[in-house]
Image (cartoon, rainbow, N blue to C red; front, side, top):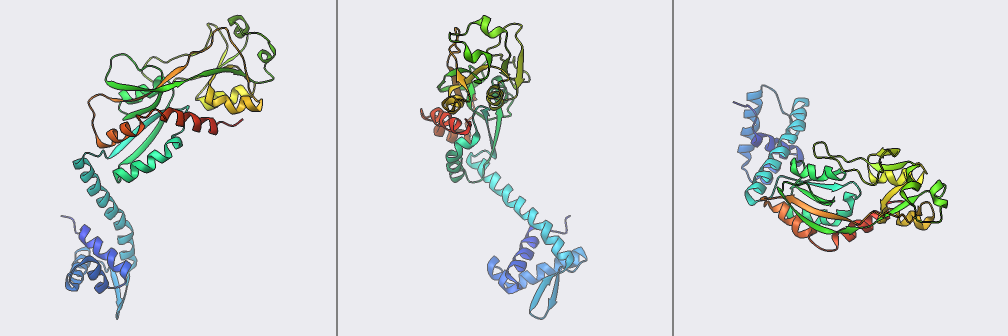
Length: 309
């Protein structure tokens, strides 16, 4: 049997904050005798003095200060547990995880996040970022509850619902100093083969990884995300396709040069996705919030602003 109770911690906390037993009793809607009895019993059970009494003034002893310092963590944990239980009973998930393609930044959803917290109370949000097939794998492995801006079609086998958010075009770019920048014709495979391509690594661990825009036997430099690819191409270390929002400012500033190629990359479809059969309140809120035609446009606009020239 524990000698320490949450009720006793709550009373000690109130006494410390209000400065007296009577004020604590008033705040907690208890009679003063209950407050005094609880403190005396706790001191007796623990064998330590919690408060020093000097006339009407009281203060915590060193042992009492340590008790309250750690005890407040227990009170906060108990409060959080009560709220989580209530949220589960009302249909709200304790935690909701969103995975986004690393091309986008979670801060793009800042206004949605504020609205979510206002609606859900204290459901915890967790954002992760993956690349290409890695986003789909995160959903199927239950590391994410929803995908926002997942690139390309999902894996075969089902188990999820995928709603197209829209399409984004890709532009072939090189640095102004790159040898390909000076060619005044559409670039052929033969033109590209002798130069290094910059490729983004698929973050999938189990699903087959995607390889985009590489020629057989071609030298390539693999980077972890789209921002790194953008930076490496601006540095003249290689060539490749980049999402149009990511290169808009750089092309305008002249730090990247758009080139026509004989085999352009088609537009990529991006998806909103979640697992089949799940119906939590947080999931339903985000499905409704993001199932609007303007979301991908908003993500793309924020991406364009984030990528420097």
